[in-house]
Length: 88
Image (cartoon, rainbow, N blue to C red; front, top):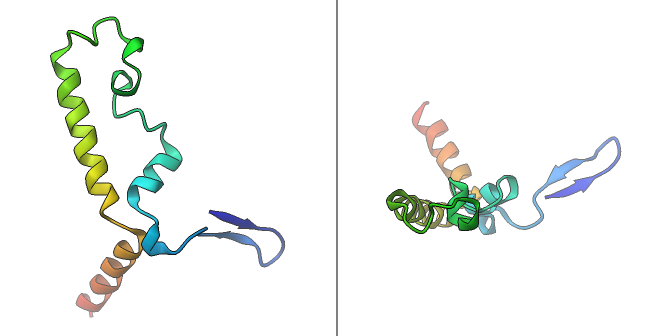
């Protein structure tokens, strides 16, 4: 994001929408350690090395990030345009 000051100011994308993925957006607001802290910081939990759920959460997070990497803001804008056309 790029901020512009003044009466005509605001925010705009810092790069083209087709190069901004939903993963980029996610990582701008989240710490990127995963949906549970032990994925990115296993030292936070004394049971992480023996936890059977940790591996499942890790796989879920990795798969989710892969999906988000494949969707750009331009893709979402296209979906909105298609929906607006279909609604007419």
